[in-house]
Length: 249
Image 1: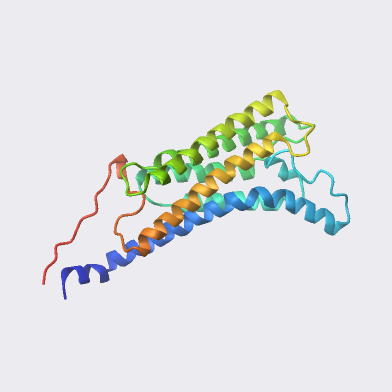
Image 2 (image 1 turned 180 degrees about the vertical axis):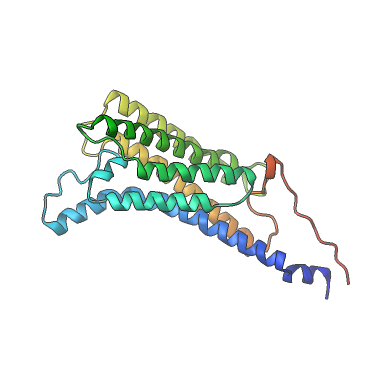
């Protein structure tokens, strides 16, 4: 038996494959939440109104966070809690581990601190401030993954893939900025679908697409039998090259 064969059958190698599979599924879970949550909120409100025989007017929430005061409150809170768990459990390298843990805590914070309702009390307004801080930090951390983790010029990914991750990260930050402008100026407050919801939808779809892309990219490398992940692990911010085993009889 050659050294290569023994290496492929070793417990360390099997654990490495399992770790890559787990990373792939966690990336996919984060991405699917990002893609499915925005349309699920208005559709859920509309469906609940239809089933209960109520008017379907106003089934679009003013923002994704405003869903806390609609029929899809449990969908919104549950999705954010699941997102937080996926991100906290995500483990890839030292830098990404810190980012994902922070993002997971922020996601849970968004779920547990509802946005301020109309006619909010002082306590509700204070909680609403925490909600805005947690939501902003969550989007910023998810943009960082697109800009600095998934997009990595030292990896083997094609240039077009890196460009797609760059575009996703920029879209998240632009959508976040536009949502602040819409909230401050009140532009579109009389629209049936308000700009704040559209900006949040754009940002959420951007990070969702990026995380699904990162999952598929890692899956493609696993199918190809590559020992190097699509995004190289970077403990301490330094690239770690895979060690090539020496072939022996």
